[in-house]
Length: 170
Image (tube, rainbow, N blue to C red; front, side):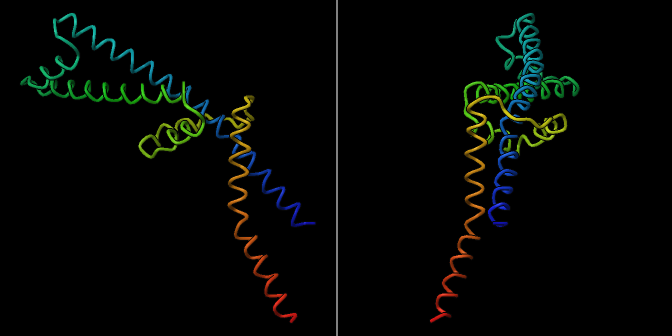
C-alpha cells in the first residue's frame, strides 16, 4: 500500500516537472524573439549602410572593411560578421519555435552551444501548467516514459527477489 502511494507521488512529481518544459519553451521563445528582433534591427542597419555607400551587399562591405589598414575598421567588420552569423542562427531557432514540435524545441533549448540563453531564460522563469493540449500531452508522455524507465530497476529487483523466494521454498 505504501509502495503504491510512493509510486504515485513519484509519478506526480515527474509529471509536474515534465509540465514545466512547455512553459519553459514558451519563455525561451519570448527571449529568442527579443534577441532576434534586436539583431534584425542591427542587420537592417548594416544593409542600409551598405546600400548607401554603393556596396553590392553587407558581405561585400564587410569584406572591403576587413582589407582596411585601420585595425578598428577591421575589428568592426569582424563584429558585423559575427552579428550576421548570429542572425542566421536566430532565424533557424525562430523557425523551430514557430513551426516545430515540443521535442524539437526542447532539443534546441538544451543544446550546449546555447546554454547561456537557457540560463538567462531560467532566471526569469515562473513555473506553471501549460494550457494547451499539446503541452499537457507532452508533459504526460514525458512523465510516463521517465517513470517507466525509472521503475524498470525496481521491477527487475522485485522479480529477482520473488524468484529467490520461490527457489528457497523448494
